[in-house]
Each structure stands twice: as structure tokens, then as C-alpha cells.
Length: 78
Image (cartoon, one colour):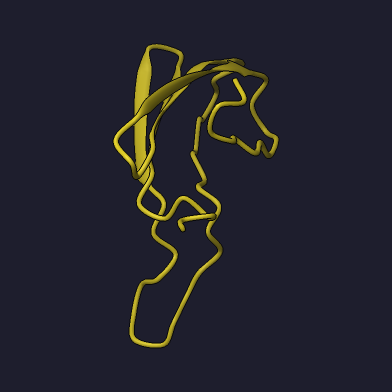
């Protein structure tokens, strides 16, 4: 029932730093924002890993790669 993974938490590891965000597109009454998570990585040249805690409580780690791009992460599709 949660196709868009609302409530998922993501931790991006890059250049020795960890950045955390929660997927929560609803921010006010009758309002919504783009559901994409955005991480400002500064001068980082590589993403080491992305850890996702899915709304059902399972945890998955995805490989990183180059920054400055969009990625779609799907549960069970590492």
C-alpha cells in the first residue's frame, strides 16, 4: 500500500560524511512537495553508499557512484 515509500529514511555516505533525510512530501495542509530527496554533497567526488530504512522496517544498502545525478532506488533492487 505504500508505493511511494513515504516515511523511508535515507543516509548517504560521501567523503567521510553522512547525510540523512526522510521522504515526506506532505509539508502542510493541502500542500505537497516533490517527493525526491536531495543531498548537497559539496565537493564530494563519489558517493560511498546509500542506506535506506524502508517504512516496513527493513534496511537495504545501495552502492553509490558519481554525484550530480538522479537515482531511483527500489526495494529489493540493489
